[in-house]
Image 1 (cartoon, helix red, strand yellow):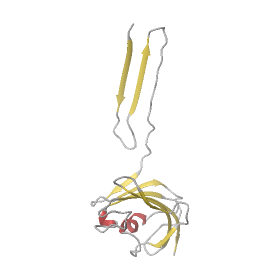
Image 2 (cartoon, one colour):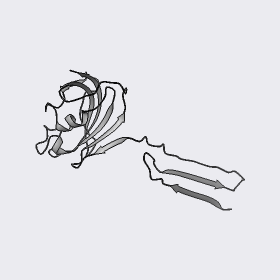
Image 3 (tube, rainbow, N blue to C red):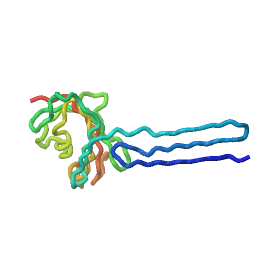
Image 4 (tube, rainbow, N blue to C red):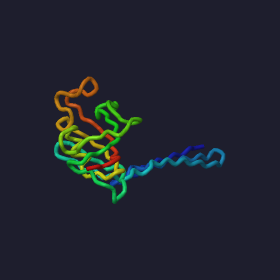
Length: 162
């Protein structure tokens, strides 16, 4: 007796859609029909802005629409996790600690943060992909961040003050 297997793949191009795979197998040995269906979950569309130098700002979650906005000159508080893009290794994080506070737009942090956090509302979450030119450059930073490293930061804006 023969066993039949069918594989069907459909890929859809569009925002936020991932390919769906459906596997159907039928056995006619003893009249039993089995079907197995696997589906990937649809990815949530994220708003991503890519700049000419490779800098990317992705909006992961939105805070309250009427929340205070981060703007240059204001003191902001953020929670963050910093990873190396090359291998995903976490080099810095304030998880389990208090929020990191700094004045936005005055060069107190790497340029990627000054640009990437500007315009966020309290509660917003963003992923920043930062090229070396907007990070720690050819020097790197200590032993954890090698020279010319691309950085990934997941940042959440916690507070904005004057």
